[in-house]
Length: 421
Image (cartoon, rainbow, N blue to C red):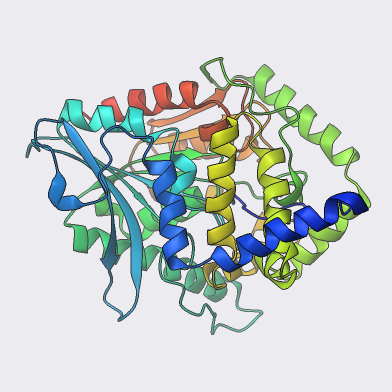
């Protein structure tokens, strides 16, 4: 459930700061649009030495090339924004491509610190890596989102909401021409990755789930409003490694979560209530008109503290553009998660049907409950699938891929190498 929403309940700046903040917000507001959105994404992607803006300018001497495209789906005007990192000398015997899938309300640009390492893996094994914006999020098409199932038809609501995303991913797979994929999903993107594998099991070779949402039978997290208000005070530290989960590590993580819960403010509880009542944090930002860009900047500077000044500025522009776009897929959340931020149809009750390798990854300071991962690995084992694994990323929180990219990149390459035959 990665969010790009900001802590809207923070106080306004001192009066002397308001004119300049308002002016900057006004300039940002008028610059939002499809063209500016593409530019903001490109600024992040140009950090890749093998990125090209134009697909027909590929240098075949490079082992890989990265470029952005829109992949049209079956429904007119439906498309998924896609970053392709492909080998310039592909092999039929290459391992299945990896597909990165972002979390709630985010976009593929959030993975900009991971593309280089994954691109090197693709070049070495003559395979490919893709990053995709979910339908209704990021820079993909923003069709109207609605669920026809009745309010008390929980399975109907959940499956209808899931289908909006996973059926469009299946169309994307067919259009791109992939037989099988390794799905790397973060948060709500991890939840949808599992849902996709359950519906299209022959198309997934492996799942790597980064801080997955919707796994345990109880709440996803002890503090659901932290999706909106989390800061980087104990996160984004960098360094450290990925370690196999142990009872002691899990106990410390859950103790940290309980402490955070006791410190939850009234403002956080109010935001939790709005979340549970079906409000989208993004519609709140849009409704704030000229203050929206300023609020988004406040969030991005607080949450992604480990980034450089230039990276923070580029992330702000990117987040602003995808947040202020038309509301669409964001409205899925109340159908997927019940009040209390727990899944209406928890993955732990469904995941044992899968017979593929599944790796769970949580941050040391994560606020997703890692017990869901432990229970899922056990469920898999009991049904004969001994390919479940779980790791803890040191010095990282919910955004493990940004908080400690060095550790997560090593782990991802390690897990992808296991798919090499």
